[in-house]
Length: 429
View 1 (spheres, rainbow, N blue to C red):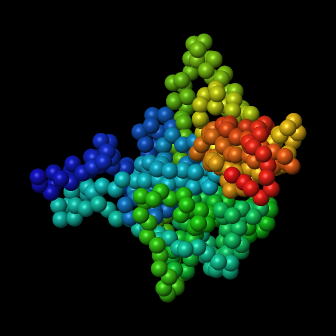
View 2 (cartoon, helix red, strand yellow):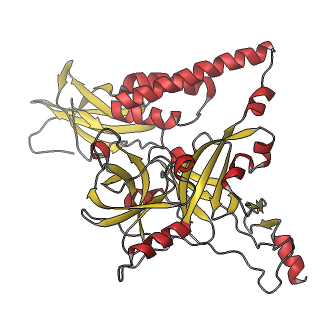
View 3 (tube, rainbow, N blue to C red):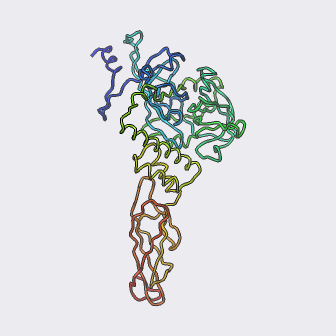
């Protein structure tokens, strides 16, 4: 096969060795200008989607992985990233709303020039990316890079300089750190870099009205915990500090403008119908949306019992949509994965010895007090077993606990113990 034919085939698809799915070239077009943003995709041209939000992101690997905020791509039907003047269609690989992080991927294929491959330079384009730092410290100089208010300030990267003010975020949040580098809407998802040019955080929010100069970024510990293990990032090695112009230049070369395309008018019209079944579905969808809003409000207010009841209803009605399962798990965890054992011997409550077998977090459990259980958010309902023993002046008593914890707050279980033999002081089986 000629080099030209090989490159032409590569421009259309690659079949992974462990998958039968085609990997499609993400390239949309080059020479892109801001006036083109509204109609970059075929769906946008037909009115199926519309440009609903701007944000920032940046390459973290040379093979096309991009990091940004969850809220930048939230509720998107399509996501496009613009790098320089080249537009790519992005695929969301992973996202976490609680941590406000999203990982995207663009598939980089050989590029043609005027419809023809350069046979001597038929290679996958390389992109600049940011190495990861180990973290930051209070007083450290940092630079925030992004696209603040692009409709007003323009679509060129902007940079601000500041220091790390605190290693925690708003109200002491441990996923973030605070800095006084100025940021604005549109910067979300952009990188915060140190004087070595290494990424130390992801821009997430500013505290408007709360504190002048209080701006926040997601810290490296949270980023590393979020990143999938199969994404191989490069760890930066501290050396000599770089000039500010070089730091900002490197970050800007890795920066991308993120375009969030939401549902368009044409797509909404396609779904309109006077059919009774459709009317019922739309009414039910409204109830679900209201329930989701109420659940989100309960989450913010930490009203765990109400949150559990609302999310239970949503799950029963339409399954695990959105973040409802995560909210349900949080509510149950906050209400308590606990069990209280009440031991009864000879028709009276006693303080028995409890030897956990499974389901308990502790090796020793005190009867009559709440004992933490080992359920884990990945398990919904799990066995709990223990052996209870008690000695009085005449008899030894023994009881067995065998139950299944159902994730419904603190559960009280009474164990009626039976005689297991005569009690002899200092003698135990």
